[in-house]
Length: 480
Image (cartoon, rainbow, N blue to C red; front, side, top):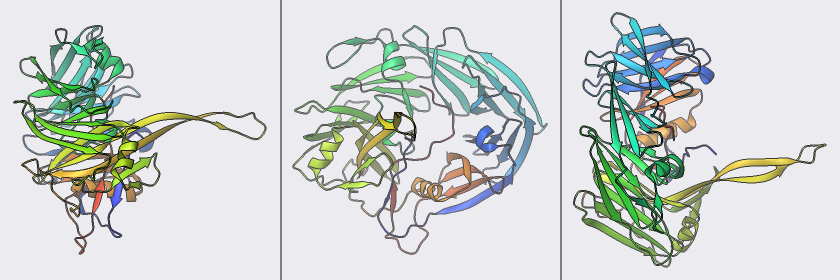
């Protein structure tokens, strides 16, 4: 099964997407399906946009001004070893980018600094300290590049901050905190994030699909802090705030809504609010808590005999990539939900918070395959199951009916991707008022950037489309 699923709930017969071609540039990458890598980036200070597109021979850099007109470009020889992955970028004060390439053994990275005006580059190497251990994730924030790792055999996280050819290392020490499950069994922080529940990086500014949010350990990156949430204990959510300036760690505990029978639980963090879900075959519980004050903002309880009055979509079940099935009763929905890991996802758009309730599970099944003249062999395949419905909250955290909402920009983008051929190396960049999809077109051998906005472009405003997952951003690599 593909890691990221794409769900389209077509609520009418004809759908058109709102999109515009912003620009295109001939690149002619060498075997892009095998060798290609592509990354879009925005300078958060000037709002200029960069495109980095490479094959095994050359790197192409396109720089667009804030109006997205081509302002500069450069082509350079790829100086990195074979099989190096483009992890991310940083942008210096003078507007010149630095690219970061991961090594095959993850022991070091190569930095390439570019001078776009002089059309030259400089290569630097950075070797990780021996105690670095497993790299958890990498990300960009405020034009800087970060790598978060689990310090080897220690109860620490290490954060590497790269900017303008320099690296600052910060340590977050978890040795004084207690980690234990609902049976009061102790876990070490090292075992928790390295073996049992690897950390999943969540971008809460976009919709996060349930196959990401069902993870028990999640990380949210803010301007000056990182928030870690742990839901391995079914009775509570453990929230840590990591201050990027002082390396201070703050812990808060939020009790889960308590059901009558054993349940699966999870949470989602958005704008300093913690959304928690607890579910089993008899009951669905949901609450919202304020992370700063600990105040309980909202509580919802639904039993199998109730109608879910706050849903804005049908209740759906999908197994693998088969056709979506509608679940007609709450009882059937909860029965299916009890067979997967509960999950919740939320994001804001135009004053509303869109919430997806549900769950996801992936597993392997083994069957027998037979060829003529053979006794057969085991055929292992990856399977998946997802259950979900949608709701909307207003600014007062009241559920609102939104059955015929207009499609969001990300809906339109995903629909375009699902219907368009010859696209490879897709990369999504969220700008102020729209999404920019950059990709390499295999037919025209060009880089193309398209703009996607909210809303319809056809004459019938009753048409609507909703999606439950989005294409993976080819941004920094997430390695668990």
